[in-house]
Image 1: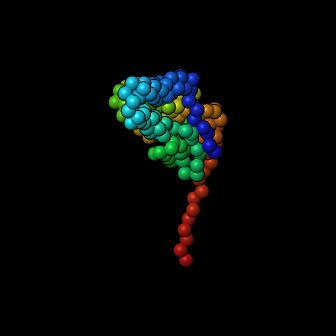
Image 2: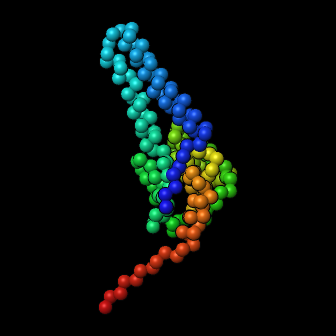
Image 3: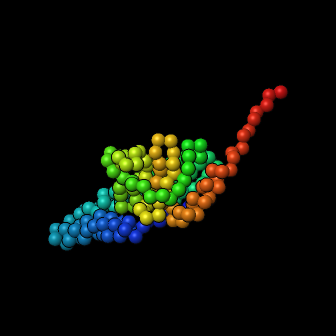
Length: 174
């Protein structure tokens, strides 16, 4: 089952205004003004590095979560990640402090992802696109925070999947 990850209201504003408006719109307008003032057409490429940075950032943001046969897959354009069911100890929606010190991950325009440490909640991994509808997967050594669009449905489906015993295959030699 696939569960999309939509940007929250605050993240949509940040991505739209800051990311696209300031990150691409402002350099584009500056390049047009510089071309008009100097007549040098090569200045039109000024916004391309900013556009490339936006492309990379959105490619690392979670786009959804899929319950596969082996585990929960964090879907991204690049660097997909699988959390095996064997490592998931539980799943709930109880609020916890997230983020904090030693943030090795990325807080970007399109969500937050990467490992974090907080003195109140310890080590955890964020793969979120909004901060309102979070689902927490308890794993050995901490937790993983996800933000599916339908969090209650995701929790029900995951808990049902965790309760279903995995098939045990035996190989017989004979």
